[in-house]
Length: 136
Image 1 (cartoon, rainbow, N blue to C red):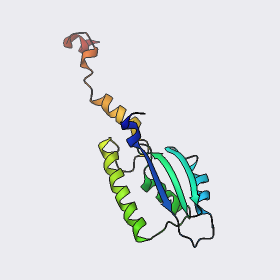
Image 2: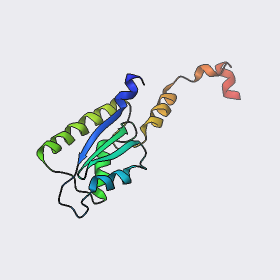
Image 3: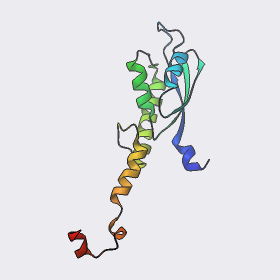
Image 4: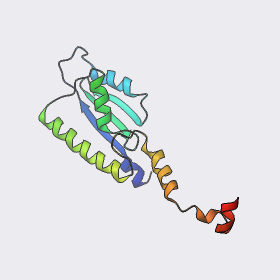
């Protein structure tokens, strides 16, 4: 695997609160995230700690955590985790923008190739002179 491809795969940990009706939130979240596009691997390290591997061009940590909170999971609100989250959100947002993904795009890889194709000069493909192109 080359270095560019390995930079696009992120390995993160998501911490949940201890007080929740589901005592094993990490395992439940791992099972839920197993079928999500872009998530390569999700596994519970402990009942409140989730290890996740994902492709940054397909999904970001912010999108994953937003989906988890919307489905009823409670993320840890300790200061260290909030600071980590803010740093990861910012760096992933910048990395996605540098790779051509706008904020909120879930499948931006295809859009990168479409945009590149649209900006290419396609006039060299038609061998006919300019005045013939108008009549045909």
